[in-house]
Image (tube, rainbow, N blue to C red):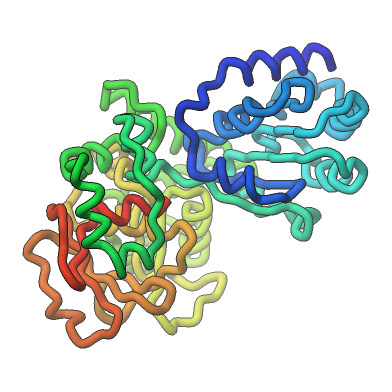
Length: 396
């Protein structure tokens, strides 16, 4: 126990708290004793856990990675019990999916040690969803997405901006733009964000950054999906081919029959593969409003999960319209329900209709739709129902 506590103290003491993800404040203010943080690999979950421990007294906090060799001879419940007996209050568990039986032991820890507050993470959203059955009424579930444009500006450029709500943007976008652009030219940074800004590990070399993204994709496919869903290697290879096809054609309207033939998967296997890739946060899928969706329903449209993935996977400069829609979908999907409208690009919360385009985009297609807006790329400020696209990058 002393050895793993010493490791914890060292890691916590070394972490920087200069930049914190938006989820940090939500966790701090939640009041829950058991919090699950899920998200894609590389989004900063480990750093988030260590930062949560940084502002506690070291005697009160224990950080452990569940793949530590310590757990070859010690189980999680016993570790929590010893920590509790030493007067600890904050248990931070990283990558719980690497520990067999984690869900059952976490349930016991929650029930038996009411003085312990536990935050746990997993790099695989698939595993969290599968293992949470015992914790459904106990754990508060939170999601850590990729860096937003706002977080990118703070992390890479040292520019701090407030988080906006959708109502802020739709009702007060002109006033907000006036305030923000007094000291910032957002379009100066937007294109760089679209290329290398979604993850907090860009170090000045784009080729190396994209290689890290490709390595992350392979880890998700080869380890997360393969081990959790018991998918064989040949199926994984076909899913990688499917991801490349999507990256080369997004926004992608899938013809399931043709895709099945091209990839070599049955229709049902193809649909299930798309669902696994979406849960693993490699793609976004949407269906049209009013359409009933079943387990084996095909999506109506597919995008990659963020704009950086286009550059990493396809190796080419992506089409501008794909980048715009992906940027909007990435930011809107955090905390909002999105569907495909019959006219326009996105229906948000079954209320707002959005048409996304470049400077020349008009309202002609949605002019008679209530609560409809044109979202334009390449403009710093808008007016009335025309809003600059970059502003949605401040939603989280």
